[in-house]
Image: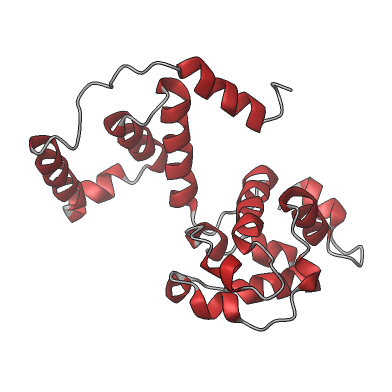
Length: 197
């Protein structure tokens, strides 16, 4: 756990809960555990902690457990939970804030591969203005590692076959498409980081 988080834990009120409220703009303390978010979540079957439990753990100050959970990475941001919440808490925004905080904090991420994929995806958009799939897959595979294991298990061969089928059908391009407006896209990234204000 990072020094920043360690310095904040054990102070009574959950440091993470306060930061989530600040970054997401959502008042999570309004949650009274009706469980509608979890009941409607299409990815809850794969989660280690259900969405309503994430909110409760934030309220109880179980910060490290929340930040290292798989749940925050498995959230599809479909906003089903948001539409079902009687207190109008946008749980998708809360999960997004938790992912960003987890990456900044240096904790062991519950789903490292999803974070790596997200980074490769955003890097491709930032560089080219849109996703170039081959470049993104290359970056993701190199960052992820496990290349030898994928080769031994046959997963790499399956991936190559799938890629070939996609290429034959025109779904995968060898070279990136030229796009106008790359500077505007880069400007969006700068604004999102607070650099372009």
